[in-house]
Image (cartoon, rainbow, N blue to C red; front, top):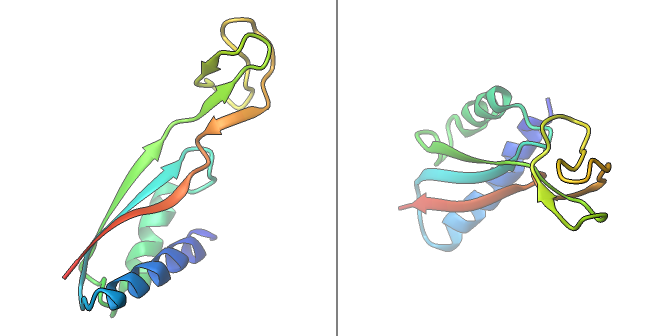
Amino acid sequence: MHEISIIQSMLDIAFDQAQSQGANHIHQLRLRVGILSGVVPEALKFAFDACTKDTIAADAKLEIEWVKAICYCPQCHAEFSPHDWVYVCPRCEQLSHEIRQGRELQLVSLEVS
């Protein structure tokens, strides 16, 4: 389950930031996660609960902003949201291989005290 290593990496960043601000408690972490990132929502939440136990983030809330996929069609220059795993432009029906959004995996904000 790679969600554990993802959460642990984000917590390492969060702990460093909390320490640099003199905080001793993390109240909330906000993540942006693209639907094409390969992250399983339930596994991410499970990993968060497991990795925050007995830390300064033990009671923290995990907020996840899911980012939809956006592709670009080089034929007709349109951006579109794919409806399945084959990225076909709805305007000109050409295949697209350019993903402009949906692979994000970012720690966006922290609430600390």
